[in-house]
Length: 256
Ligand code: 6PG
Image 1 (spheres, protein in one colour):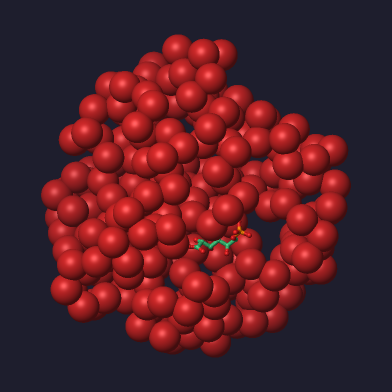
Image 2 (cartoon, rainbow, N blue to C red):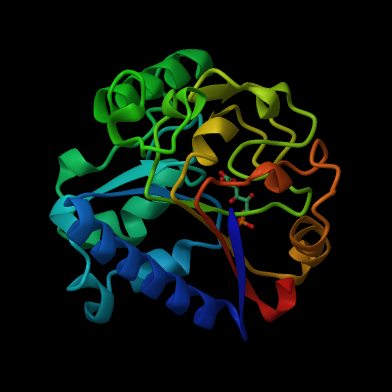
């Protein structure tokens, strides 16, 4: 894993840099293999980034017809609910750019129980990547690694408690080593609604993970996770994100 930390004066500069990063990754992936698989982050921080991608300076550069959107996690609410991660991206980005509808693979977390919704999303991923997830394995991938899909870019946020996606400190789902997608029926986070989340083995198979973090309330946990490799990672799921590829942190001054 190669870790890189980039700092920006404020959320606006951070979001502009993140849009540039995503555009560049998308173009490189499109040129390399005609496909760009992007896992979108939830929460509030990435909203401005999503709005930036609508601007002509980014919109015209994105290879939309070869870009596929996935979600790192979703709250078990309807897509038009204010807490829906898909709903936020749909309003900020999807409704305003020419990404083909069939390229948008949302977590249908409102359908059935959280466990049923997690199984359904795993089926969606297996259909896309191939049953064993090794549709795009690299020669160096071990058998274990080839059992999981490898996204080109996984975007994540961090909570001040060190959670990421819907992997919350102390939750058994943090230890999941078999499933690609899991239910989080009683998340220790806000909003306190059941969730569906990608698991760490999937996140860590990413070719690149991009953390987007803003705000002073995240500073302590960010410093600990970045600077203390021995951070008791059972307390900070974000410290368990150690992708096989690149790990890039985009921080504003307040979170640095
Ligand atoms: C979620 C997100 C979660 C988020 C962090 C940071 O569904 O809530 O996946 O992991 O990224 O909680 O959220 P903010 O960007 O709102 O601070």
